[in-house]
Length: 114
Length: 114
Image 1 (cartoon, rainbow over the protein chains, first blue to last red):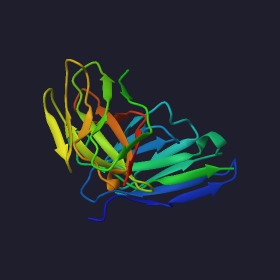
Image 2: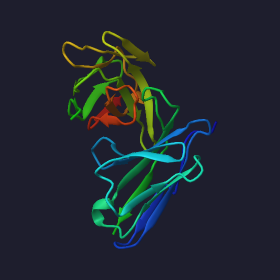
Image 3: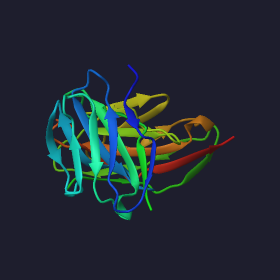
């Protein structure tokens, strides 16, 4: 068990470019979550998957954001036409169904849009 | 909607001092409550949790008691160490218990001086 892995750790991109982040959860965890954390704030929920199904999306997840978990294992989060307001830490977490919130978080991907 | 309010930081203490970080919540039902810790450059780690009223969560010398009457879940430690320096987040899960998402407070930065 190597924990939750996120790649890349850091990403700097120009405004208007597309970016994609990857998350590899703990292998036996069937739930996967994406959160966004801005400086000085707590994480905010974006979306979650149970196996390959995306079951809930936050209003924070605009049309420019899309997340997938094609085989119920790793997940990707894509941001199209990035804006400076997208600069944040993007956190991935995983859990077993019914784990009552005992998530395991990855170290996050820090996105900077210039 | 659900919300979590934490005492504002930063909090600076000397080693071996007593720590209290206040957390209150607003929820329509009976959520599970959590404390997460984030060390510099790392993801969030679950520190402790409580799933029903009067439960006490504890880990690594930290404790928090689920107080339904005051809607609080204050974090305490009797003697802090330099290694406890981190950001601490209080969080709750949705009252349905399915823990589809967590609602976090804004975090409290703790610095412990030798």
